[in-house]
Amino acid sequence: MSVTMITAYRSGRRFSPAEELFLAHQRQLAEFVAHWIPDADHHTVEDLVQDTWTEALLGGLDTAGAEPGMDADLPQVLAQAARAAIDRHMEWLLAEKPAPSGVEALESRAA
Image (cartoon, rainbow, N blue to C red; front, side, top):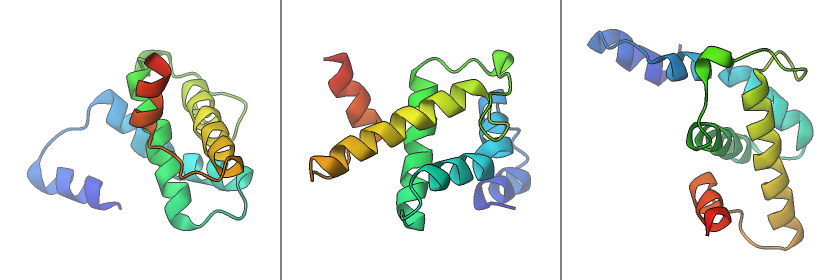
């Protein structure tokens, strides 16, 4: 059980549908990212999972329409957001620059 789940359980707070979706697929999302970047360390994978979630939320995540995708039973919206986060990460690696966070990348894309 994650720290987030324990904290919510102890406080009696209920999860939103978006939080439930993330918690239900967090491990699968990390495995998906690790599969596509096999030499990434745990921290990089965690950062990319967070960037994926940020992108999905800022992109208007629709938890009601979270249909399973073709990637390890991840909902399609999360798989698409993960692929975008991975692509951004790889582009920045190739350019030898530090990868921006999901919010910074979305802000620069919107500008």
